[in-house]
Length: 290
Image (cartoon, rainbow, N blue to C red):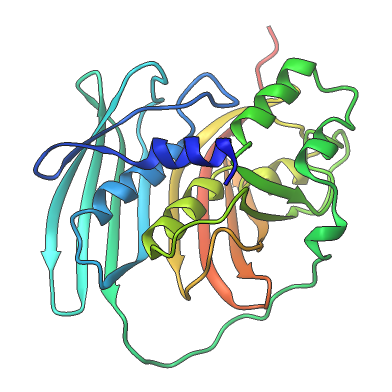
């Protein structure tokens, strides 16, 4: 296991400070606020620790309420909304400086047999044939060196490989609002199903709004031609998967309007099973000229 992955796992191992109350800390992000994927993953950890082990997360719905302060701890308060025969529901509120910064509802289910179908996996190149994240980032001479290093530090726990140029790599001309990345953790994980769901949640916030930028030829915060932040985030976990094995994140944007952009995606295992569906809306604004 890489040192960066162990550091991330330590970050997700919340401190229990009271019944249904947990405390977490933050790590450097590529923007000067708490990374949204981190707070979502930590909130899911808090929820999962109040649920029987035989009930696995099948969905989450979250709202980002305020920017998180990376220099202050985050307190996660869990409400046990329902414990049914098949489903368990939890609500989590993340608090900093006495104010909520994030709210999450998560549902867990016992395993059962049922109807089964899925959308087919789209074509994508083998991840082994693609440049690593570091190779791709260092190939763009227009990116400032400190920006590249911040990207690499923030993503060091994950092997994330773009199929095509990301928005900040090739911008200025609108492209199809569709993006694909392969990802897996940089090291093996235990078999705890919650851990794999939590790490997929963490990664899911890294690239989902890229397709919004592609549609308008924008490079994003890395080149300063848009400003933005996540507003809400929803995930449905359909089938078992491992976050330490390759997952294809197939993303697209059906709409942008009113200063907001919508991204939707499907995450597939390398053998073609649809594991997760994701939808996120975010603020995407063009900076005003003074």
